[in-house]
Amino acid sequence: MSLLSFLNQKKRYLLKRENIYFILLIITIFSLDRLSKIEIINNFSDTNYYINNFINLNLIWNTGIGFGLMSSDSSLFYNIVTILVGSVILILFYVTILSESLDRFIYSIIIGGAFGNFYDRLTYSAVPDFIDLHFNNFHWFTFNVADIFITLGIMAFIIKGFFVNKLKDEKI
Image (cartoon, rainbow, N blue to C red; front, side):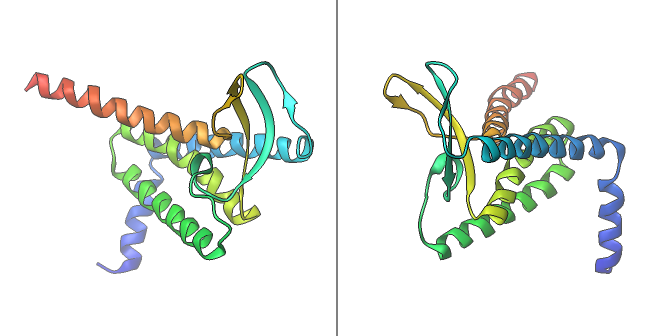
């Protein structure tokens, strides 16, 4: 089988109706993330906005991975992390195409968020984080809409792993 015929076969499979819904979910999550970040960058870049006693909007440029972990001033480290993130997105997209519907849904949520942050890494060389949750003087990591979807997807994946697999084991 030639590479061209392999790619044509995968293209036909990717464009099936059921896969289109998951692609639209990824695009929707990516778009929500982009719109929120554009709004924050254009209107809140120099000021903190206090919503209530628990939530602030405060723009922070994150060069690390999720929630500011592994931030570094090294461009080599940043580029390696960016390549790794891009590779994980591609692998996860491929796994999504081959998975069952529930897994596709979960992976699509993660991909939509990850793609939003990956886009920022390529465009701005950093990811704009702006949601600051806090209680008194304890502040959680500052995050963005993409991080919310990535976290929800990972939580759903873990919950599915515990409960769905346990239900399957009990039926056997």
